Amino acid sequence: MFRDLGDLTADRLGDALMAAGAAACAPTTVAIEAIDDGSGFLGSLARVRLTWPESGDGPVSIIAKLPTTIPENQAIVDRFDYDRREAGVYRELRPWERTSSPRAVAQWWDETTRRGWLLLEDLDSYAAGDGVAGATEAEARAAVVALARWHGAFWNDPRLASFDWLPESTDPLVADYGMIFDVTWDMCVDRLGGVDRSLDTTVRRARRWFDTAVEEFARGDRTLVHGDARLDNLRFRSTGPDGSPSGGLEAALLDFQLASHGRGVYDVAFFCAGSLDTQTRRRLEPELLDLYGSTLAALGHPVDEAELWRDYRLGHMLNLPNPVSALAVVTPADERGATFLRRNAERGLAAVADHVDLLH
Image (cartoon, rainbow, N blue to C red; front, side, top):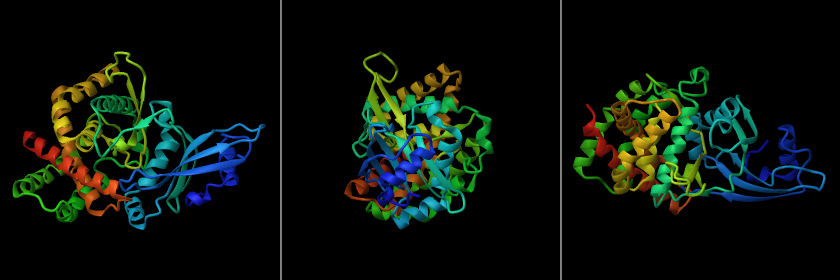
């Protein structure tokens, strides 16, 4: 029904919302505001403001998420079933009922064409961070607490293994990322303007740990992995100076295109690698890992500290292909996107270099 933002008319939105039971009639007017995070977003996103007749009742603002209009990015989406994964998370798992994430007001998915759309709750009381600048310390703590709560909500959920749209770490959709690194590393190096020989050697050594991470993350305690826990996929709001571990800041998680089934601490490694500047990451890592573990323990899921640190380090090895391939092949929407992709790669490579020699 919705192929691009031009399809978001009052009549069509009314039909979708009425079919989902979210409205009793069509809105009288809609105003579309395109949203572009600039980082090579793999979809088309817009805020839709709606007005209703006096007899009507419906949301005043929603977020519409439609397929990307960039052919190169659509090829990536199709190759890794990104849209199918996100549709499945909203349809089957309804995460807003367990943890902090936007509610799906209406959605549609066609399994044959692998196309669909989402109309989501607008978290307008939340604010975005700045993925280019990097997370503040308060945002980092709130993000880690949100990730722990997300993982705790789906901890060892037996249904996760039954969904054919949700890959685990040994699935080719995840495991083949190692080969994607192999074919994109030289392109990444070229876009970085070159790297020194010692970093090249270190990164290639880290690549050899990738398969170990794949195998270990398919065993033991597993959960619903977000898979793309970067700062631009979180929103924050103040809850006041309540003395909570996150310092009075609460985070909500968005965008589940890269969801998978595996070890949750991968998301923490992913966040720290891409969303913290390198010096901040190095300083905060012990505190953030402790915060993640203590939050999980409070939810009834204690994790051994040594195991947590090993999984965190393996998480950086598993993440290695992501910033490399993103810089190499994702088409940024603008200059901010290009800057983000470059910094994401630089930060991720630094994190890999910091942790690879600590693995045994």
